Length: 374
Image (cartoon, rainbow, N blue to C red; front, side, top):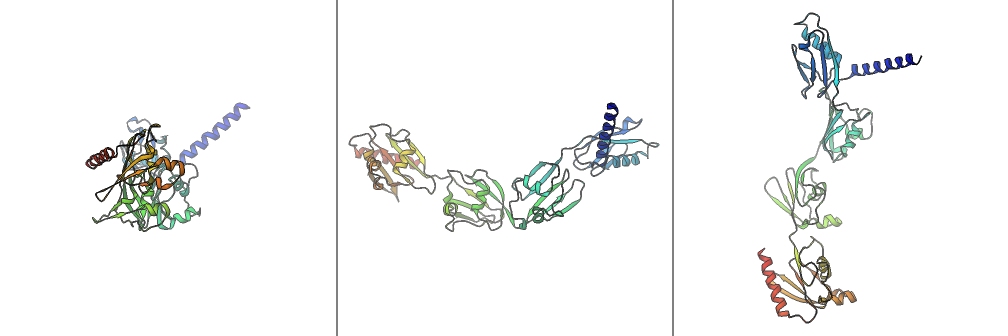
């Protein structure tokens, strides 16, 4: 009884598998076995190429894509009938192709995706990171591996309208085409330089956001937009980026190149500090003398003369010298003892005691001269 039950179940399973294979539609990268009884010279395993046509011995090219194995066997039989008497041909699926779909165009992550059961247009769009434009601003088309094509109302599909959210088949290619989108290049100090699709009329700030945003060393106050017609514009994006204020931004056109340069603003912190050297001045940020001392990892030891920190500033070719009592600022919090520093400024922390200011200013002037030559 148990043996009979297993036999029945086995027959049911085999019948189901046979039915599934009979309904299977062949596509590129499928491997089929062609068996011609008593004629091994016409038999063998064949990989269906991307073009979809198989070139078989004694038959020539046959369209295989979209055919069932049974239909392909019938076509081979008809072709061999010109050479053989009543050819007996069987075609079986030896190795099925990877079940994949292609999502291209105006999506966040265009590419190839493994097809999951019951996938429709919306699942494919979601797997590709979603649309990068509004649904009303794009069209979509679904190209089947068999060669047929269907237009997709992408806005209706995203609302899960049954007649628009079409089911997907292996090898399908979903292409989303923007209606009013241009391609621009983003280069320089951004996290992911490259080509991006932006809505026509959007500014450089939107393109930089698509490129992952600016790096900490970027000079957003001096962004250059090189237009395809040979002209260029400079944008200060600090205001629009930080608080949405200020005109600054530059509208983009097709073929524009957005270049985010590196900030070259530097300050020097020298003398009795733990890490003397040159430090970048963040674009658009205000630093004070105490901030600069922090960049140098603070005073070297108790003999560091914080009561008489030298600040050398050069503007319009003129040197401005100042002595700052940073120790008093740390004690009282009076900001008059903690002025701001600017690009090109040099701070010098002397040793405790009364410094030789002639020697200090002379040394710092020498540093400035060398700095300008670098």
